[in-house]
Length: 116
Image 1 (cartoon, rainbow, N blue to C red):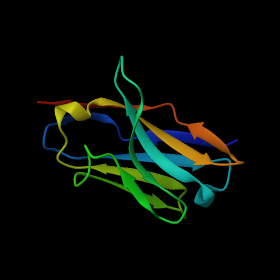
Image 2 (image 1 turned 45 degrees about the vertical axis):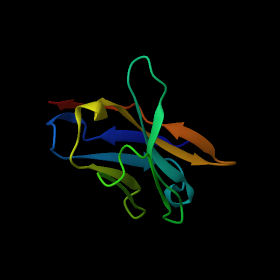
Image 3 (image 1 turned 90 degrees about the horizontal axis):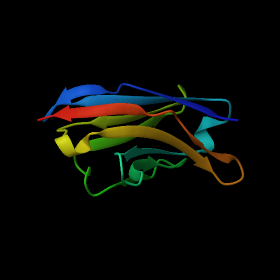
């Protein structure tokens, strides 16, 4: 049973930067596809960025060129570097780990608020 713990959320001004971290434990981190999702009240959770076990990347169009996902398999951690943030990036950000046959796990979420 994997556990995910996000950190790094907070309040940031528009145009600023923030780095989210997600610490993974309880299973073999390197085999999982890792993703960052976000959700605002009344809307569905949406994929922000993903990185698979081979390092292939996937980004939502709304964050391309501004956000960067990366993983450190030695530290069992996935990161989301958020640059040039906008008020519409305000959301609860969730870390996800997924591997068919192994499970689909979520962190508790971290709030990101971008002030204009």
